[in-house]
Length: 69
Image 1 (cartoon, rainbow, N blue to C red):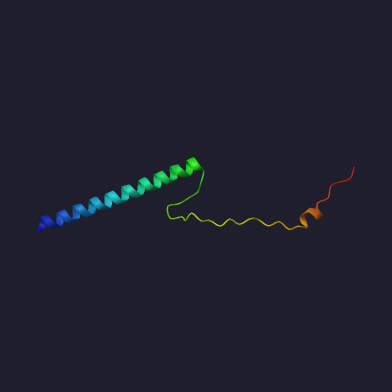
Image 2 (image 1 turned 90 degrees about the horizontal axis):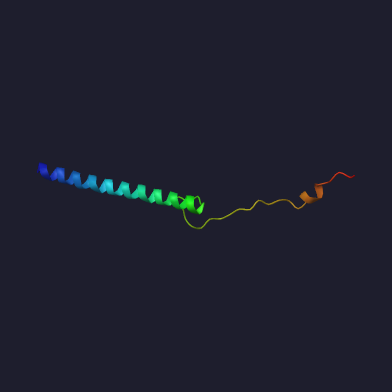
């Protein structure tokens, strides 16, 4: 009975180690990809992003005046 508890603990520990190593490798590879492609993606990001453009009022051009010579 005592040996069975050690075996269960050992298998759970091995699974935990494998999962953490896989997470670290995925994060590292994604980070390297972001550096190479100059992106800012995360592990849980979606590919669809909405980009908002800054809207400049049209009367901005009328207010600009240059000094006369």
